[in-house]
Image 1 (cartoon, one colour):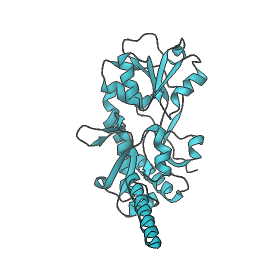
Image 2: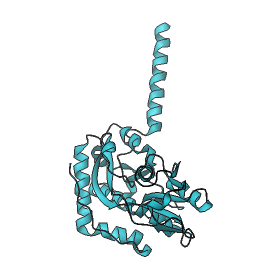
Image 3: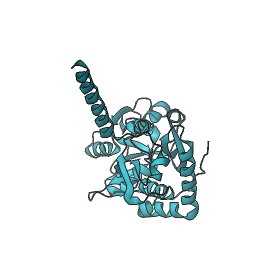
Image 4: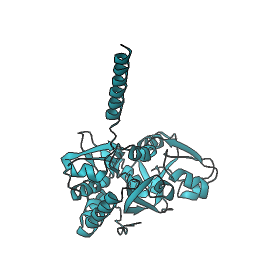
Length: 277
């Protein structure tokens, strides 16, 4: 009886563990192994117009989405077999480390600190930090004008707001939200004075609210967007680097940027060189 009871308990624990694993969607397979099976789970942003956006009809659009689909195709996975998973800035490393995504294409700046936790393919795009304000704002014209206890919003787990405080505006009040879309809503309502992140992200939000918001000042950092994947997965990183280079050389990279930002006046930059570190 005791043995049977112990077996039943053990079986229940095993079933529970299996259920938890299934619910988390984690996997021990590499991205290349999943691609060989014909399916991929790719992390993107759901709230960044022009880059990674979940549309009302359930479709996904944006430059990051275009890059993700191109890379997936080069890995042998069709668009209909991609599962897009929302990847907020503060959760990106965790999603990769836990195997909940195969890789992440989500305005993910390559930094030395992040490279200690995950690997990066790319970069596939280079931009710089800028500022978004309301269109009727005349006080904020650039990073130095943020002094005077102005309220500056950025996202938890991202680098831009702290960069401003450390280098340019010591007495700025940092307001951190979970997503940039929440920062933009706070800006519209007057709860914050400015939003800071990468120029291309801000231009997407400005284009979404014509006449209400504007990007001001020159860019003041260098942000190289990489595709984040599990640390040590050199096989997949090499394949993704090959795909990025193919997208650039084929003209698909420029065409994707023109499609997403051509109507905004955004000047398409030169593509970055892939870093095969």
